[in-house]
Length: 345
Image (cartoon, rainbow, N blue to C red; front, side, top):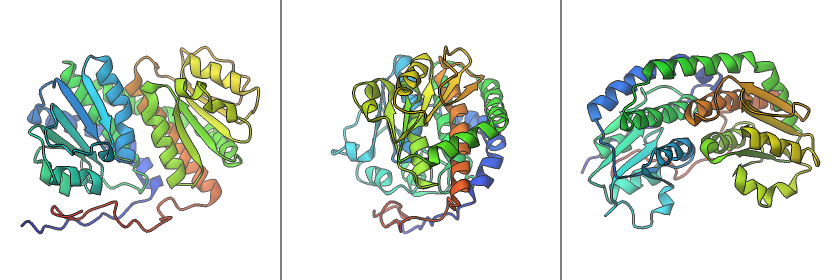
């Protein structure tokens, strides 16, 4: 029996994680490119991406893009696989930024598949060890709300898709990351204004189209875990079919294009607690709430999602600062969400 123990890592501050994130991601591009060449995952007939928490959120946009490129791609929470991984066909990508997410590790313990790979940040870890094949972000220090680990997971999945679609875009990714960081810094004052608006709301709806659900889901996680705000993520078309009708006391943060801009106009009939993060090609009425225009094309969702994540992270930092919250201060004692070993949950 392997009794190796994989202890948890100490957090760094969210501010410190954000401050070095762009440089870390740019350096990560070549590191990921080297690993993907070495692992050389053939384009699968089917791919299942499994994660929980921020790792699950990070996969949403990439899985959408995999489907758009013709892959039979699916995203799962571990709890959505009652039969485990036994008999699972195709490639399974298991994501845990810590490598210690108990539910994900337990899937591998109780039924590894013939074709699986882990994506982790911290190394060594139970998940990376059990999977044998691993794509590692770099063993980077991070905060409790997973800034660089989240962005890096999106980048790793994007570059995996590039490999399957015969595209080498290492230079492209470096340029897009640098532009995302520069844009967020340039819009810092506007982002703080958005944070102040959100803080005085009963709740926050974060709405995005299906290609950008990584941003909406992670935005909610960060606002809940950091400044402890009530927030809910919803996909745009789903939101139109009833949930938007509760508009009034809450705030609304939307990521997307022209349809999301039109939704802002609709919501303005009930509230002015509105914010839109959009691209330069969006047709939008600037008269409703806050509006941030990013120099990214919404038709290319993965770079847009990474740039929007920089915005959401800054928003979280400002909201926590205004409320006087230490993001790394735990709200609860976690009793069974992480595992330190290979053999038991």
